[in-house]
Length: 325
Image (cartoon, rainbow, N blue to C red; front, side):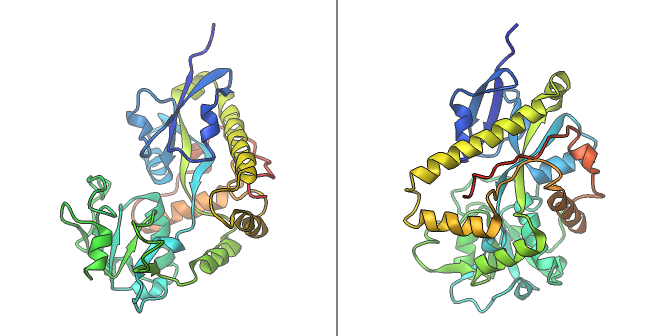
């Protein structure tokens, strides 16, 4: 009897789009849905597999919810030094300079913001002494509870409905903002800059110390499906790897993303090796350990979840040598 189609939902990352090209995974045809926002697989009856926030997943497991199982397929990674923005004429230059300042951010328990706050604590900044303001990056962004349901201290406030972090920064209400994506005009009007003027250099230093690029989102699967077909864990890992390699081959031939595409690829390979987006375990163990420590230090996790509970289905690490090169 034919197996039901495997329904996968994720944002339309370029390295995932080949999954929508008639592939099969574990004997199942794939229905790939490119989504505008990160899905919450717990609330999605029409999805079997989905991109999921690492923070949400870890905290669910910590609370004893095993209905969703994560795989070490981190489809969203990114350094956080570039995510702290200040006005172009700001005197602030380093994460330590944010001590006691007014800082806006797009969500309190978010994976990316957890990593970004860790940059501050690594420099001895007391997070409780900062005035935090939660809100959307721009007024037209979706409005929702950005505390994530967590009780927050008196130093954490929410912007007025209809306001945005970028506009609050422009009018001087904030000293800095933390955002995963750049506001309109960032690349062209020169009104904002990264806190660390050489954010790329700071990120390279971070990589040399940590040997990973922080992961924010991973692939999760409904546990009942893996119970029925445990070999699907490795099949998914292999399929996501194949999609990544397919995308790289097309990208490297059709170099129209930006004028210096080939030079940037060469620099990326020189710094990070052939694959800056590796999948599998135990390669990501140090990164996940550091992330759980940051969650715990920031009061978002009572205790780390053991590795075998986070990733109960062992999968072989990928061996791609083609993503960056």
